[in-house]
Length: 405
Image (cartoon, rainbow, N blue to C red; front, side, top):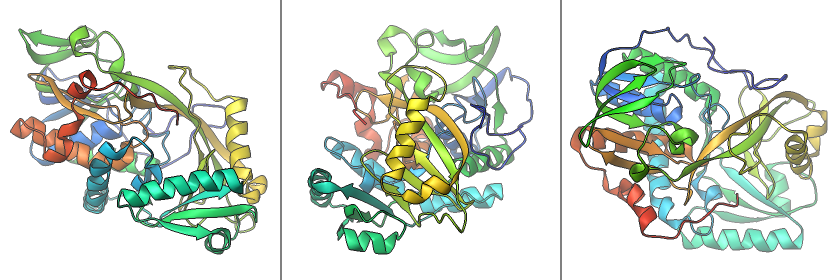
């Protein structure tokens, strides 16, 4: 069964395929994970490597929510913005874990994830954008991030295909990227080899309780007993039905549309990730250039729109004229799991019930630290220090901040 599913007449990007056996629902498991996306599979693989019996229950297909729709950026410097200082230590900690995470994942799955350490260029055109970019650069420097201010001539030396109108840029050399299609294929295969049971088309209908403790869950009328249940269902984590009101999670979907262009020797491509105020562009080793992503606070409204695609293409064409000759390979949409402060929620909600959700647009960056934190929470009963600021309790202490991008 393919890990990528067509979402439009053109379809989602094609990546490696991994067969997922149609396992029967078990009657009991050590740990049941609700959600078969990046975070759910990363946690499953981490716990299975520690010897736990793991069952992953996915309401649709593996990676169908946000994981296969993402760009795969590991970019704490380019992502850094006013108000995100509390997230920065977690982001940098996770980036440091990525090389070991990559090496183990590729070794245990036998698949490459196309890890690229080329850095990010953040661009500006015109005086107003340069002033805003200078503000971003000063923020990065105050926060101790590795960032270099470049004049337009130096930016175009690094990326000759950019328009002469590019006025300035910031080089973020420690920002990296992966290919989401390849990461998800590798995670599914590594989980399978580690003994994880992956079950698709298994929407969880209820969580079972004994007093104040969670004892398992139900898929339809089938009960699965579990020593622990981990809620990692992404944008659906805030939906009603599974959790009592007292444990509700401030997580909502933030839709994004993206597209992939097919590059050739004639069209040229980029050497690294490039960001503008309108879009980000990420070259992949299969010759595709990913352009993303719109930000739409519209709930679970499916599909790809003409307006969304126009905004992406025009935003890219504004700095990279070569896209006019590139073939559109695929288009898609997905739902970022966004909390009220754009940071993840990693917490024990009740005895036997753990949440790992709300990663917004940093799911790939934060996957290693999230998997390690949840594993420690399940096995040791406490979060590591770096993850302790990200419990659900913080939403009762501060006024929520809504994201604009």
